[in-house]
Amino acid sequence: MIKAIVTDIEGTTSSLSFVKDVLFPYARVKLPDYVRQHQDEPTIKQLLADTCNEANISLNTENAIEQLIEWIDQDKKITPLKALQGLIWETGYKQGDFTGHLYQDAIDNLNTWKAKGIALYVYSSGSVLAQKLLFGHTASGDLTPLFSGFFDTNIGGKKEPDSYRKIADEIAIPPANILFLSDIKEELDAAKTVGYRTIWLTRHQAPDTKAAHLQVDSFDDIIDSAF
Ligand SMILES: CSCCC(=O)C(=O)COP(=O)(O)O
Ligand SMILES: [Mg+2]
Image (cartoon, rainbow, N blue to C red):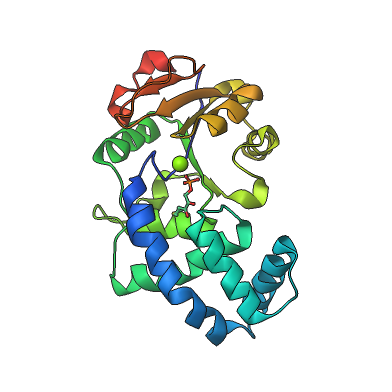
């Protein structure tokens, strides 16, 4: 019996295009000035140190900016980059430059599952701040109350089985009672390795006949029997 659902965001609850064509370019343009203006604040200082450390380059603001831009262009899911992106998007959401995109089928079914008593969680490479901003600023209002918790790469990478083990431990629900939803096969494989139930949101991409995960076009196709 499924007691909790853990969902990915990009490509699962929300469109790839919103992240790649709206959020990432916004952060790319604003990042250099944001970092230069805030570089003496302890949080930003630490994120710049983490960036240089991760990249194995000498600690210097301009080096860090160059590295961060390169990671944005490569869509790297590296924790200090994701933390900085969240901080930059905060201004964008608050100014109304954009709202968080969510598929209507995701909103409808998340509401239904929550009403049935299933606990809902988010696990995304976007920082917890970025997740709360996205769900907190949608065309349908603030949807953060739907969720019992949020996880990002501070718990570990999304393709690493151990991350899913740690999430199960934190929410105190056995993996066999957790359903993980994602658009990325390797993430689903990692969750399945530790005993999660898994469903692949293909969003109308051609199915992979060799994958060991139920594949659906949208949340509307996830029927109770899949649980
Ligand atoms: C949390 S909003 C921004 C999404 C993001 O930065 C990202 O890298 C998406 O990763 P996901 O794990 O949700 O596919
Ligand atoms: Mg995704």
